[in-house]
Length: 376
Ligand SMILES: Nc1ncnc2c1ncn2[C@@H]1O[C@H](COP(=O)(O)OP(=O)(O)O)[C@@H](O)[C@H]1O
Ligand SMILES: [Mg+2]
Image 1: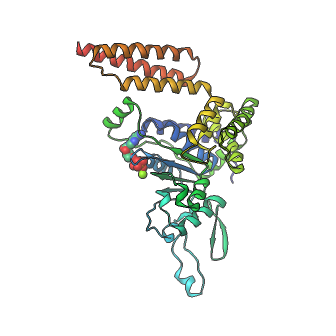
Image 2 (image 1 turned 30 degrees about the horizontal axis):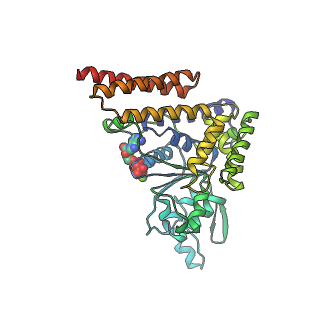
Image 3 (image 1 turned 60 degrees about the vertical axis):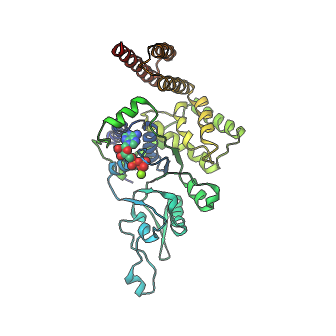
């Protein structure tokens, strides 16, 4: 790994922050997924996004792939996909000498960044190779064990694998440290943007190299932890165990690096409790039963303010979707209720999320008032 000067270091961090902003400006309601993708790249741990078709999984992951220079590999798996498509065809010249060697040029074993779409469609043969490459970062070719240059594999799917679909899939699921369910756009304002903006493709003004990603990884790993953050992480793990959520030791160990990577992305100089929120995508095993509970425990311990803001925003959305702005009575009640929420948000001082939420609620109140005037 090349050593970068201090100036280059902060330049790399700036690139991450710029990409974060530019992605977030283009993609609607995907801030958490964007943070996760960039955190995964910094942590050099694999990421899986699961959600219904058309919720911008590919748009985000493709954008991430295009952001990084270097050797990339992308594939959309089907149940007919063969190992050749993933790790390369068998060399004919080698076969003539009775050797079984794959030509891995431009395939997964030579990639620094990989995107596997519809990952659960993989056949057993592909799954086994994937497991080894993702987990041990090695590829066996003709009796030789080769280290792969893979920094990060991102994957997407429309569903979570269930235990009935077999052990191999559960094993592969565990190889992704970051895992998240992507949901359709939730707010009215978001839906408007979706409909009335024709191009959602992010325009990224920077790009990043594998060496720079390595530098970010190293810098993140060197970030110190505040005492509060140490205590919060230990409390989270204890509380999760009490709730019946006990991610394996490897996952717990890797949670430390994951949190540091997120703190680095946030531009922090040390890890503080709110950075632990990224662990909502890390600290659970069962994708159906546990993620929500785990997220609640983590938010309660790591970021009670953020949790309160989210609750208030959700209440605001409920009011908005239940209100017919053409009905004067309903509109008046809604603005009164929204005013109440706005007041509660304004009581949360010096929290950027709270002020953003407050501006949003105010905007919505203004919109309802305007619609009323229009009606009258
Ligand atoms: N949250 C969103 N932000 C911006 N565009 C979106 C969003 N959700 C869907 N789209 C639009 O829908 C298209 C389909 O998304 P895509 O990434 O192919 O979905 P997926 O891979 O989840 O099936 C995108 O290219 C974009 O135009
Ligand atoms: Mg897709």
